[in-house]
Length: 264
Image (cartoon, rainbow, N blue to C red; front, side, top):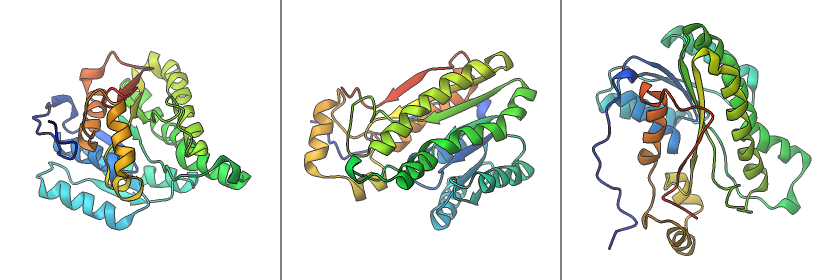
């Protein structure tokens, strides 16, 4: 019997092309973003990230240093709903790290809410929190990728809208828009050697998910829906992002990649 609570042992791939590659991750202080930052740092990449949580951001850097990262990750504390502040922070990080040739648009917030309670202000907040900054982060880094004639943009979506989950309509609708950004910008940037893909998680066992939304009933339902009968962990999800960031994913663009344990 597989223990659904046990993280799997794994010997993950090494990607030589990621060594010294300049990478930017939004929402990199915890959860999936933390796993991506840690994974890139372990590959020897020059990683920078943005997050609103100063304490967790500092802890992420300390953990990467303790693990022997070749380059200490850099970060800025910023609210990504403030596009001007975000783009200023990115410009500052470029001065420290160099022009980015990898962007992982990850930051999001899946707080539960009812459609009956939605206000116009909260609708705008859900789109600003979960979608708008994706485009403007791309706008900040794409010119350098085009000039370099290579780059990888990985947008983190969600399978929630595909599964018709109804506990957070503003979040689910915003996440459906991520695929529109991916496919549109993949066509725009493809002639310049810049790839754009979406990676969609199912129910990934992050600290936030386990603290805020976990229940025995919900986990049992998720495992029943999954072909793999155990939890999916952030470090597993991050492996698909690393593959797409590396040269190994050079022929992949305008695609959706599900990392959900075969959820139906």
